[in-house]
Image (cartoon, rainbow, N blue to C red; front, top):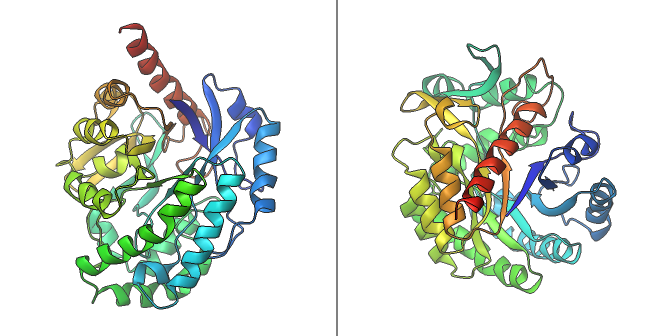
Length: 356
């Protein structure tokens, strides 16, 4: 197992590589290249420039999060083959640059949604929160504007401004698409890119839908154990795997996260784990919380133990953190609470190792 932290290059992060290097037990970062337009090839030169910066700080860059998938691929349009060819080339370049895991998602139009990026907590911290009725009361443009306006000047993955002008038309397109069609488009993509993942030793790890229920009539498919089984069966290669995000799947109280972890880690199909806790106030209303089990609804010990017991050898990162100690940062991606989360998770792992 390797503990890493997400990090954004090109000065688009309040957290420095030097600070990450000083967190005990953290060996690397999951990076991204936000300057490259969706659908374009990530060149070796662009990848290695960021990798060399990370390596110079004494850290690894074995994970990329993420190479976004062009909407034409998700829609199944004739133009998808051009963008799939670019994705194949990008996988090749990542593999040759030492990247071993690629976290991506297949969510249509909206990567994720929250109603508030700075929801106040009783202890004075602020967190990302979701109130279902509030989200549905907004039109997509207003939701996008709210997220961008409250990002403190940092980019917000999945809510890039260039995507906004076509958002309404994209949402309208999916209203007539069946879930079966969407599964087919996923299979088409996987069958085209998995051979490249195998050849260049880059494990593909899909991220669940966040939250795992329909919004604005968009198809949501990576939402529970049954659907994950369906997804993995689309292509049986061990390179077709998961980024198991406890907070995304845990948003649905019907999902037994330790059981899901145990099943798919046991099958060696979890390549990357995003571990965070959440606290519900209603079935579809929740606040992100501190990682400690008692701070939310998820049993973090049981989750980590499921990975440990099944011999997990992939990557873990503490997912979204609270904003604490007056820190100003990209919502969810400050230094302090994620550093605390990493130590809590590493502490559980060490206890499990020594208790064998």
